[in-house]
Image (cartoon, rainbow, N blue to C red; front, side, top):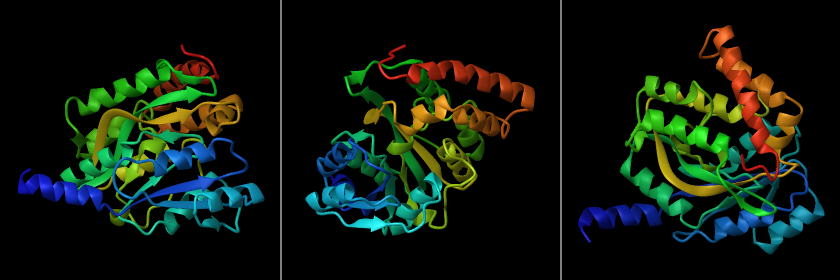
Length: 280
């Protein structure tokens, strides 16, 4: 092993990283998320667990895994919950872990390698898969479109640096899988998610980060599996049309209203694939 390889291995194994979990309500999937984080293959994963909806069940789950449960006294929505756990994260890098999703055992190691290679990193993210209570499901049209959107901008590169490239990545939709994102938190300490959005708060956040100097990195490995079920925030937002409304608002940040409306309408057709058990 060369001195360079040894230095990178040291950086990876000693990465100052936190998984920040904003827990909400009673989730039967939260423990699986926590276990998948604790089962990372490399390093010593750290977890910050926060909630604005404390319960005996959640306290017992935290105690079972020797985690401190931090209680946010204010219930002001998803953005506030995410911002709360971010403020608790005393680390150079942070991943906001969603309670319905599970992480591949190589997630932290592979993202740490990316961070070690790119000192100017703002955020890194990976490909993803999806699962329901019935198990893993085949990539549907939404997953395939997100992969295409990433491929059209990244090509064979691991990173993109220019503001134009980063905006281009986001102008036809949000291909960045939110729970796969690792933020270079030390570099964006005053960053917050916007309370003006409920379902597209991540997309809006990535757009603001795209304006900053630094690179976005994309790993083509599916290192996160998103849970799709009737009570998931994604499913609920599609059912009550909140997603469609916020999609139009975001597309208008890139396109004139007629074009934005056409793109948003095309996306609304694809949301049928989010129904549990649908593979198309």
